[in-house]
Image (tube, rainbow, N blue to C red; front, side):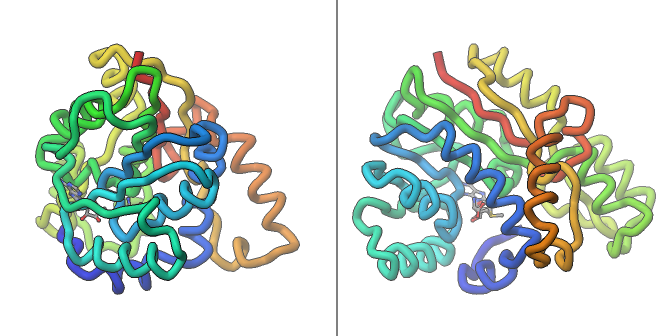
Length: 255
Ligand SMILES: C[S@@+](CC[C@H](N)C(=O)[O-])C[C@H]1O[C@@H](n2cnc3c(N)ncnc32)[C@H](O)[C@@H]1O
């Protein structure tokens, strides 16, 4: 999938369902972000999380890197409107070949499946590790393999899927719809934990956002929203439930 219209992207990916997922990720960002230093938002698109991080920590500098010029143009507009430039800046680049030296960033985030669209996900992850300073964190957020299975191929799916699509998904972890690859890979928690072993990283926290999907009508109802959120945080770190949620998140620390 190509992201070649930043304005359209921001129009589509908003509303209560996205607020729920983004809000939960921000909750954990607020726990782990350092007070200052440099953050890399790899595949940061239109800058949603660079903005959130910069608002959470006033002395943090953020680089929003993306392969799509259009996404970065939209991000630039937003950074200027919010008066965040030059503390928050943009950089055109590929996660698989990051234009930064080793051990450069205090905190690296890669959200919204940015890594999942890379043809070589292993190389992309090793690049995230390479540019992180020892003692720094890498926070990755990707589609859950089983959560996505239920969403895209399950009984109530709106998608026009065939059993061949499902078989392709099982083999490649890449969502296929009507014989077409979406190019977006999903992950199991086991795969994400294996990366920690292979790169000698500490797993500081893992959670899924959201752990259970809620209809947008519920999320728009202020009288029940606090209870919904309480349930999300109560269960989002549960090992048994994690795989069935939407976006798997792992916060790694580089030794
Ligand atoms: C679904 S968007 C997520 C954007 C942002 N991280 C967020 O959560 O709002 C995925 C982004 O990954 C970017 N992307 C895909 N492949 C990339 C690559 N190899 N290097 C850098 N960015 C990439 C796309 O251009 C797109 O902006």
